[in-house]
Length: 335
Image 1 (cartoon, rainbow, N blue to C red):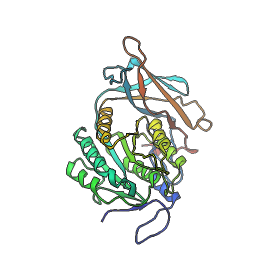
Image 2 (cartoon, rainbow, N blue to C red):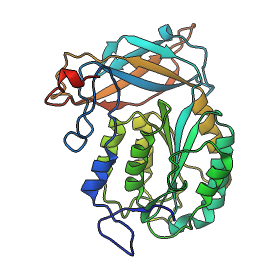
Image 3 (spheres, rainbow, N blue to C red):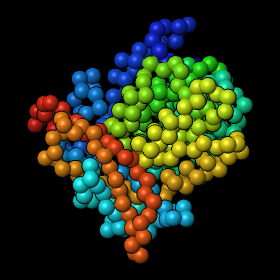
Image 4 (cartoon, helix red, strand yellow):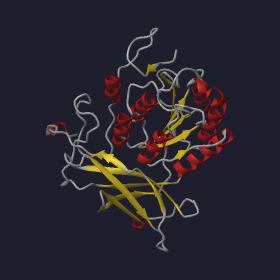
């Protein structure tokens, strides 16, 4: 029997409904950035906060020329990173295609019924194009959040297992989009690969979640995940809200797609797969002397140019959360 996590708060027919407060607590994400020589305290005490002044901000970066072609031969000196307008020294740079932990987060509400076959086919095509060492999970959502993989299996690299997860369930009910993203970001942190990606497909705005839009944006700022979103909207959909999917992608450094026809969904997944495989990893250390209490959220801008000094189109996350804990952990715990 699949595990079911609902989008609001009481028991219904044996299915555990989780309150908004508890949903956000169990999300308890490792904060954005990599900590050196420090541990997280109790997640219930200090959610979504960074505890060390020794922080490494890790950026997943895509670069294209003015024709929309990927530029994959740049070096560290071709990039400049700005945090809140201040130039930051790059301490690590890589352009190697590394494995990724990927979550496929799929709307399974009633209105998705005529679109489901194309989405499943696109998801399988995407998996076939992925790195052999990528690991996947599937989350289906309507009124409930339903992990697609069998109980006890957090991730898979097996195509047949992924196929079964994508086909599980039947479209019905409403759209707990925010709760599904909260759940998926939490699960993504369990993945073994440092590069993490969510692909979110929905045909409507949220209408039953306990988590709010602001809750989700805070989690995205605290996570290292790159999020790609696909909006399968129709003109007569009163719940449509492309702003949400667009902002999720923009904030995290991914991309937003709004196909006008269903036959565009598979090419979009091909494009996402290509984008994931053609990214740079850039790491920098933010200035520890800036008052984090006054500036808990930092803005990021990355600029790239080639040998001809042409400005290129760069896509990466635009913000991250940096709010240190009020008390440092004891030194003997900083392992």
